[in-house]
Image (cartoon, rainbow, N blue to C red):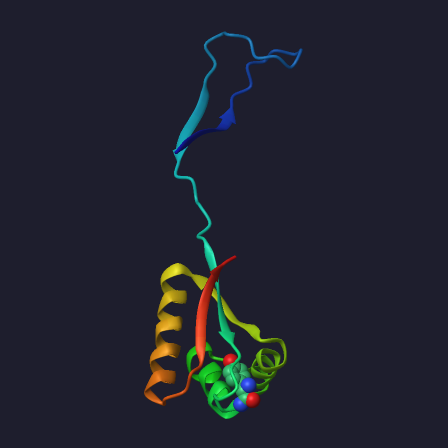
Length: 117
Ligand code: TYC
């Protein structure tokens, strides 16, 4: 919490300094708004997971259209790793679990990880 002056009443002092003549400074206690930590969710390349399966993952769990999903999949295929999205901790954790569970159910070795930004 930080007490932040929000209004300084004019005390009529022409030289610009505040004189102590009973004038007041109104303050309010303002809850500090903190930005949440953000996490990248990454897909890792492997030699076995079918390209179409990776595209499907990106559409299903990351709301990518076919074109964006294909671009991300090819980036991972060519560079070894690529970003699916950026989320708060719990959302990122859920995405990673969903992808890993789905890949395992289909017996693909696809790996998905999260990394603090
Ligand atoms: N390299 C895989 C293939 O040639 C495709 C692939 C892309 C696998 C992205 C994983 O995260 C991945 N079938």
